[in-house]
Image (cartoon, rainbow, N blue to C red; front, side):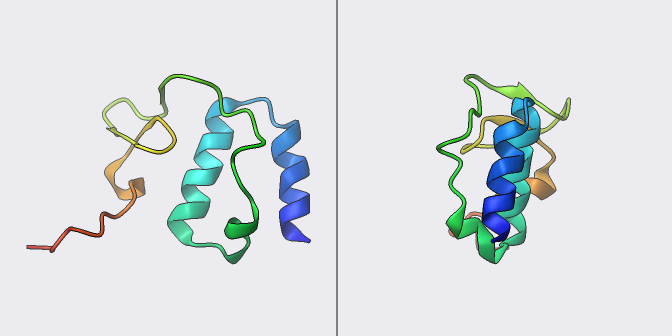
Length: 79
């Protein structure tokens, strides 16, 4: 139910940056509905975007983000 409402909202959204940021935050917070909502059907544009001037490049969504929004790498040891 929630994913259908989100699909409608994302389909009507015209901002590439907003849609990319939506998926980054959904992935980061591990929402249960995220597995039912694929970014494929939505126009996420082509090429890199910058949301933050001195950010890191998000490998999946192609947006410069602050480090705290970057995905965690499984091979990090924390040392």
